[in-house]
Length: 115
Length: 114
Image (cartoon, rainbow over all chains, first blue to last red; front, side):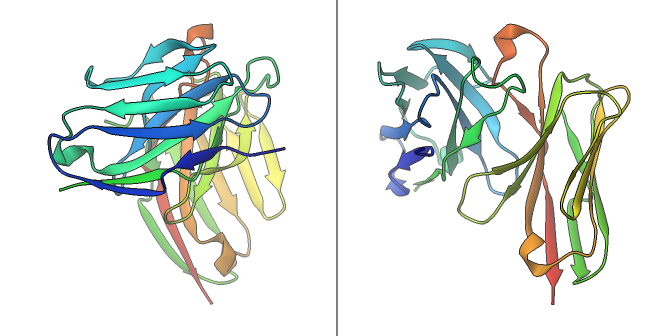
């Protein structure tokens, strides 16, 4: 069983640029959630994708957008990068049909630095 | 803003000592998860508790969910250096549209020195 993978591992961008982060969900999981984790903080929920549709969003501006593909992999896009966007971006996969406990499994994250 | 308050924020102990980490909220959760995260890595799920008053044991780790489903604790017996990490609690909502959308605490950094 393949776990959750994310790419790239690290990324450095400048303010105003755009970035795309990628996530492959764990085998058999159809739901992907994205989180932002600033230094010294817990992860903050950005949004979730279920069967290629956005299924809930946290308190993040519209310049944070996403996609989910038919194979359930997902992308997180951030436009007009700001310094405060520097963080570890985590994706987590889950499957309502396979877990009655609402369990999700995280990837290793992408460390984004905005200069 | 973290809806889940974790305490203490930082804990440094010697190998062999016991420790307890707390996770408190004014909200009621359908389930609560505990994770351990190491630097530069994603959180790793340790346990999920779903029933008020539930106690789960995972080797030297004991997890408890409060009767009112608002709080939880993690107790480590005879801590080892391998227990070092950031311990995060995360609460799940009741509604079906809250599936997989967890509220996280800020974490407790635990350092166990030999």
